[in-house]
Amino acid sequence: MRDSTEWKPTSYRTHTIGQIVSDGSTLVGSEVSVAGYAETIRGRGAICFLMLRDGTGHIQAFLKKDNMEPEVFDLIQSSTRESTIQVTGVVAQKRPPKVAEGEPSPPPEYEVNVTSGQVLANAAAPLPLGVIDEVKVGLDIRLDNRYLDLRRAHVNAMFQLRSKVLQYGRELLIKEGFMEMNSPKIIASASEGGTNLFPMMYFDTPAFLSQSPQLYKQLAVLGGLERVFEIGPAFRAEKHDTYRHLNEFISFDIEGAWMDDEDVMCVQERMIHYIWSSVSENDQSLIDTINKYKISQNEEEISVEIPEIPFPRIPYCDAIEIVKSGGGDIEWGDDIESHHCDLIAEKYPGFHFLPRWPMAMKPFYIYHNKDEKAATGGQLSRGFDLNYGRDEMTSGGQREHRVDMLEQNLRDMDLKPEDFTFYTDGFRYGAPPHAGWGLGVARLLMVLTGAGNVREVVLFPRDRSRVTP
View 1 (tube, one colour):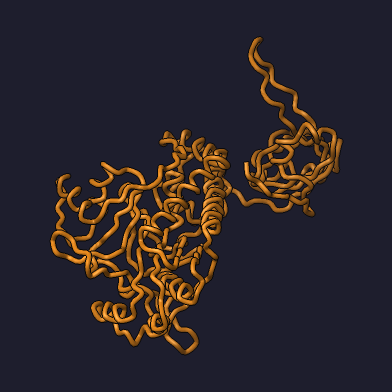
View 2 (cartoon, rainbow, N blue to C red; view 1 turned 45 degrees about the vertical axis):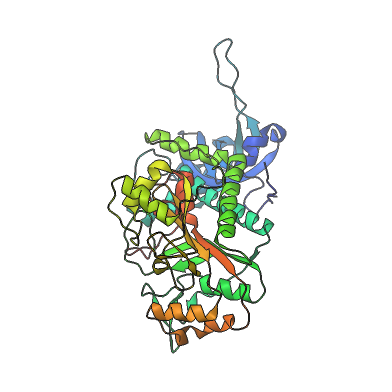
């Protein structure tokens, strides 16, 4: 397992609970300090059993009134569930349970025999949602109380997994020569045209929240940073209310010089393959934690099936024919919607690319190959989508690097080229052919964790009705 973590003691604990659970044999007889949430508090009178939980595991702390200050003992024993408590004591091996003859002995377990401690903060009661109770809770209640929801093991595991996905994606892109950049999130003009913008005032100047880092990635490439990537937020004022749309989201975005649409599709499938392979190798414990919850709720378990590469390529024209042959109502030039994707997913249920979309259906900055036409006579672009089953994951493609074509594309979309000179001026001095894509992090997590709603895998989601917490 790849793990370069070097944990250091703090003022409140000498060890994490996970360290004691895993290395208890070397710590027996040693004094330790641990801190965590009070999961259960049992016992009356002169003894108390406290189950503590931190982000690394659980451990039992045994308190005896005669072995510590009676006032502290009483405070801890009377604490509420989820109160934060710090204890100091000696590590001991718990008495192993009796097993039937011939049965293997269970691995040893450890506890802390407490000599001192303190209640750091008492939790109010009752809790708005259960933390260790295996009871279904509505998503809205969970999101309203996300700070408690995160203490639930399977939810915590999802967000640890999200961190790993960001780490592995970044690793692969850096290995392939991409350098990380940061684009502005306050912009003067629409990144992709259209009206799905959040307006704001930037001092005395009208401005917008950025829809995409698209244009700035390209300007960086034009400046000689040949391969760039960003992991950051984007904002879309779209009035969706679905299981897979949010108005603020985080995405992987890349741009590469001297690359076409096929080149960057290859980068993307290698990145996804690397993420899945790394999770399979290093993070099965997180998947197991999620599955333990799913089993308790009679839900389908998840497994990390590393996708084979290359992913299937299904050109737009072929996708239209698949939909038609499946009984779908669609014609060339129509958008491929989710119910159409259901028909394609019957044949291609995993990751698959949908390249070569009609020119009229892609943004002004997508490369328009005037010489490449469909059998219908319609002109094709170098734009593509990536789908997983019925769900779109990515939009990307080769970019238009010819300034005269860029300006004509803007006019064709009823946009004024003079409003985009901050962008088009960069193409007047020699622009390399280049390509890129944007891939939503949350949609990757939905596939990896089996989450049925994008809000499950976003810490504090922003949609049409939610701006808090």
